[in-house]
Amino acid sequence: MPPTDLELLEIYVDALFTHDSDGRMISVNEPGGRPAPRFFFSRTSSANLWRLRHDLPSSVAGELEELATDEPFNEDLRAAPRSLALFQEALGNEPSQKPEYFGPAYRFPEAFPVPIEVTRITRSNISLLSSMPEEMEDLQRDLEAWEPVCAVIEDGIAVSVCYSSRLTQRAAAAGLSTLEGYRRRGFASVAVAGWASSVRAGGRIPMYDTSWENTGSQGVAHKLGLIHFATLMDL
Image 1 (cartoon, rainbow, N blue to C red):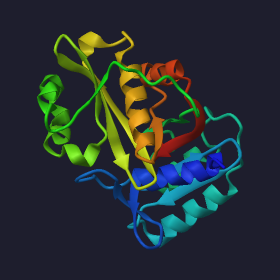
Image 2: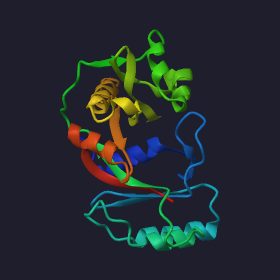
Image 3: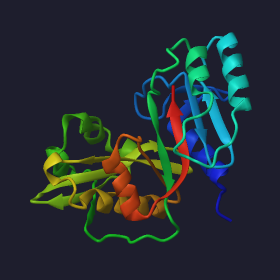
């Protein structure tokens, strides 16, 4: 039986962050990961899920726990939490301050087209990534930590690359980079579909998220028929 949306969200959160023995967040789950947000709040249409960073003062942690416990469920996954301003205030932020991250999380349908135009990147053909931006140098240096890595090759170079930005034994979250001159041509959705197929073949659950501001990334999700099952927020 497939996991429920809440179970899937719990699996995803475990992939997004490393945690201590008390379930408190420590860092973003990537090689050399930066500190986790102080407070993470997420929800499906019928349940809320949150995490606190390990170094929050107990008074702040207690206030956030109380607010999050009282937060009502909301079927509108685009809506901000009712207590968002109170969350910010408890953290010492301006109540009107925007979240560090706010956007949809998607699951892949049981069946989706598996493209043949995707190349799996390995050490033997890693030179294909030489065209990608400098921020992807970590991926090229530590390729095995981001596998599977799938690319669309055009004009002899990788023009769109999808990789495992977060990885556990159960799930992988998609990271995506497309060269500016090759955007809005369908390459990104092909790369993501190829990556997701490879993730499933390896026995993991592929997942995809983006911010509300990133309409291009949302377009990739819609083109692939991904299902918006949860909303994520970092404060």
